[in-house]
Length: 175
Image 1 (cartoon, one colour):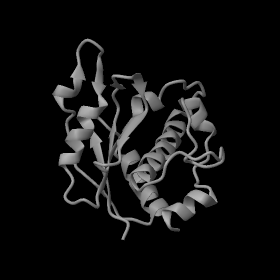
Image 2 (image 1 turned 60 degrees about the vertical axis):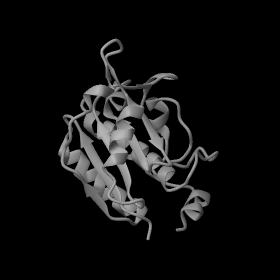
Image 3 (image 1 turned 180 degrees about the horizontal axis):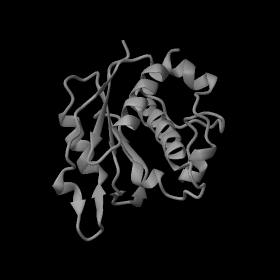
Image 4 (image 1 turned 30 degrees about the vertical axis):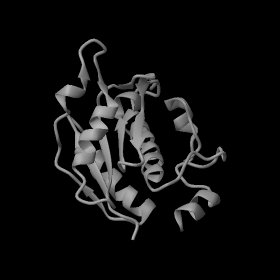
């Protein structure tokens, strides 16, 4: 048994995208996916000075939601995130806590194709979600540029990334 994936929408989120994401994550990982009720962002994570949310504080809040050690929780929010070492991040994961977080705010950046925003942002969300959840299941970044686990540094590179695992990463996941 792989363990259950739990998607935790935080703040104002499009639940159609969350449902679609949960369905695709279930297919990719062969694991059940639950969706928690929408939850508020923790006020203590917000930095007035920066106008951003400190992702590590949110990860700690998500970890408390786990019902058992086998659950992997993926938080999705539409706010700007930071860590002390990075001023803007797309996502962050804590493998020991089995929790990850993705910012739609960053996935919406660098968007220039008129009329296609929802589709492009959703594909960015899917790829980044697969990366973060795979990381929680034990994978690290891959050196194969055709693998979804290939490390990218911005959303334009994420757009070019495959949405599939390479053979090596599939074997590591036990498929």
